[in-house]
Length: 327
Image (tube, rainbow, N blue to C red):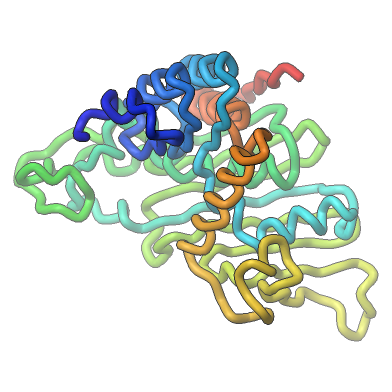
């Protein structure tokens, strides 16, 4: 089928995986939910908070299982960080510093793809990659209470694509088009727990191809992770002996979350496809057990609220409070 409506209406299809441009997510998801299909939806979940809330309402009406594809949270090292935090190994969290740096948009001569177009994408770097860091921060630190942000578009125009291909690696024409979404966002965070944090996201960072990471500092230790070294988690604990104190590296292996399904011994390595496999394993397991997946549409709505508040703060310069989800 070439029309998504035909796919959604087929009785032999149980799951709909929405990988289309952001502007189409809500329409497809609501129709799929009404048809009783379980839904995997690419991030960001929607164009607006209102769309995300409508998607969640439709899913709740039919009781389907939903997941938003914040795939990096399924990385074993990141899940190990969550386990250490929950066990109290770093004490109470004081600060979070997150970042997602890419360079595919750093060249102003890259053609104007749909991700630079507000009508198709809704927002720019913040929605595309910044929401991954927001998801990780919520998973590891907790809910956001307030945000204050600087949101910029440093490259305001780009060459229009030559031909039908509408991607950043296609040929460019000599005619220019307007970029009407952000390419950089710098955010300060007050968490509900009392912790504080920052998030930096940009597509203009030469040399950083796809660098997502974070550092978390607590009253009894620190944790650091960088996706370009996704098989490693760096930790330091206050009760380590003085003569061996400092960051050390834990290598991904069978003793970490999901690790027993990937490796017989530590240090054998993993890649992007392994993380996607874990994501889909978790989604299918939730369907089989008729339990909520994580992150689901409820999480997606809250991430949309946070991203929207960041964009508003970028315009007003003020601290913006985050509406909390109903319990």
